[in-house]
Amino acid sequence: MKFNNYQNKLTPALQKIIKEGYRQACNYFKIIAHREVVFKGFYSPEIYQEIFNNQEILANLKINTPQRKDLFWQELQALKFTTAGIALPSYKETWIILNSFFWKLDFSEQMLLECAETIAHETSHAVVTNIDLWRAHGNPHSEITAYLKDYLWKNYNWKKILIEANE
Image (cartoon, rainbow, N blue to C red):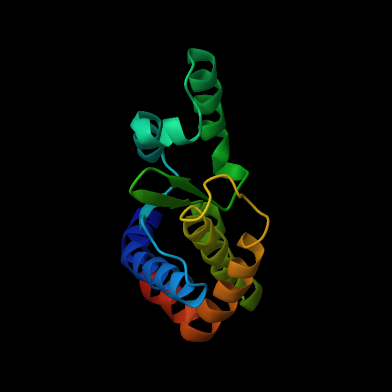
């Protein structure tokens, strides 16, 4: 099976998991969600272009000069092998984009746990942007990530999800 087909089958499951995790974390931590969380897919030239063309995301990231735009474009191109995922807030949404490299290695217990951790980590960024756009990796980000990792690991059969997408 081609990997694009795998991604296409995996995308709806990940969107559901991300939305449920986001809703659950907002409720648990009593955070009012004023952004929608959207799983945009996996790193690709098309996704990079969509990010680069989104003026709200650029404004939130303070990419407001030609030099910063050039640097940001270079950084987007380098994402493929450097990070497992990113969360980018606009005014009404937070986009989550994942690195497909981390989703095609194997179905070992360690890899499955890393997939759950990645979703928890990026979803916690989406939750935190409802409080403070610039809070990055401090509290409550670490608390939300730990909570979500535990919640997502216990409530989803990651191996089944990935195997079904691979069929």
